[in-house]
Image (cartoon, rainbow, N blue to C red; front, side, top):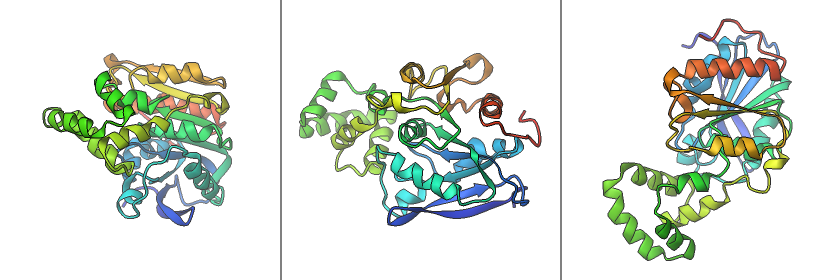
Length: 290
């Protein structure tokens, strides 16, 4: 019932497939610039339409969105869990994109949303076929950002393997801290961890340390005010990149504060697609995204 065509797709991935949607500007088959959308820590595939696809279509971009390991149906139906080496996920997605005549192979942009901002950047250290990266928000170390709410002494117990004591402490704290309770439960589930401490230890691999210099694709990094999840991480990533990188502060006063700027996505989309028009030589927009 959408105004533009959308196709449910299956993307070959290792010995299985990943579910996806291909949102098309029209049914002409014309090759167009395309945003490949990677979502985050607690996202589902259908969210892609509201997060970016609707705006992309208005600007003349197709959008290919998918559930990767740890996300949506790939997690719930296939029991696929997050993995730090996201290039193993994104490379097959790009392989699939290149089989579609509606997608211009020279004008593919990778959009990482929330935790997807790390996953896309990590993949881009090894996968160089995209024309541009949009990191919404930027994230250098998921481990550092996700453990800020954990007391240092307790984090040290985690790293030392004192799991029984950690579980006791967390069991006492979680009933009184909704954010901590949600983050740990969702992390344990989506990472396929055996315990809360196991999840925290697994997250140590989710960092760009030692590989950020391998990212050569031009990157747009959003840095909203008052980001409860990734505060400081966008600038950290921007400073670590040696390739072309543009960081855009997003002001609370313009409704763009908080994680992923959900109070002002339309304005954020304007920044994003104006930049993509320049960096993918594409985007013959059908209507202005305002």
